[in-house]
View (cartoon, rainbow, N blue to C red):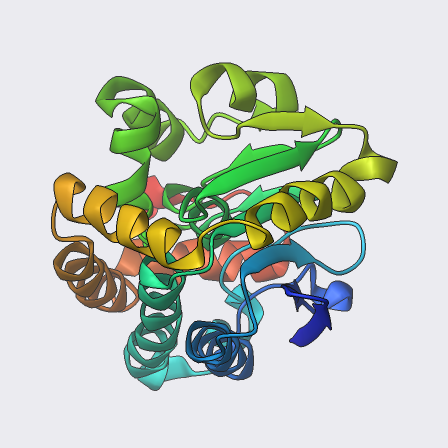
Length: 256
């Protein structure tokens, strides 16, 4: 994880480009540390969240999960605890959070984009939930955020059919606020962040928390998500799905 301060704007960069910025335990801990740092610093008046390299975030690190064998549920439970705490802090801190989505956001990567107060994506961006493709259930607050952003029917289409949205579809569905040219994405996100950094930080924070409160108990839903996906990892479907992912083949769920 890389945290860089540009004046009053903190740029938080998911920094495992060789693994498409997938979330392992260290990345989860680092994300929470970054969220806490931004929330506690009065000098940070806006935050930009983006990914290093060609992609935003491919979600959880399935290869790391696959190495945990019988302890996979404990691994996933710990990972979601860190990630969900980070999402909660980003959502409720005073500083507005702008997601700059480059390349592909998948799984929990979609949750990290959706939890931001504003989101801009590059023209080549793609969004895919992918959980049920490997026999897992959603996490990253996606089961709470998506119905509120795109509606229940579209959420189920994304979660059950794993439809991939391109940048213009994501804009039309309300998943992002704006589409920028890929090579201008970070510049555009920083422009928005600087405008917000010049504004009333306390009023923004109060507004964020009022909106979050009006939408319901996100933290309770994330607790349920974490427990559900941890339980799913011990199912025959998930074992087959993760194994198939690692072996680069189609899963055979009907054999489970």
